[in-house]
Image (tube, rainbow, N blue to C red; front, side, top):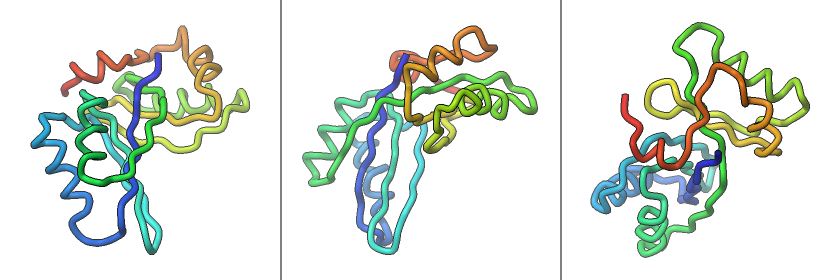
Amino acid sequence: MKVRQLAVFIENKPGRVSEIADLLGRSDVNIRGFSVSDTADYGIMRLVVDKPDVARAALKDEGFTVREDEVICVQLPDEPGALGKVLFAVSDAGVNIEYVYSLVGTAVVLNVSDADRALRLLEGRPVKLMSQEDIAKYAT
């Protein structure tokens, strides 16, 4: 199961992240998780949302450059060490974890170099692999 993530390229100036959040809210899109990284000149806002098609269209209509990627979302057990165990299951097998960020609650997004292999490695572990439909329904 993979989930669609949107990466929005933005100028590194005050208010750009707020503009995206406001635009998505006005478009009736619920942000389930996000991360923002930046350089001196630009930033990337990664988003997992309940309605990726609506979000992508709204962002493009406002002139934002948007890329879509498939990522893995994992519902972790709410216990110490759970994240480390999942990350080691993937990285110890030689699959590079490019970044990790959290969603609402204990769900996290993993962008890995080999998603299909990582999914196989996570099967049978005490985590719930999340679908796009799970993201749409997800709440704390």
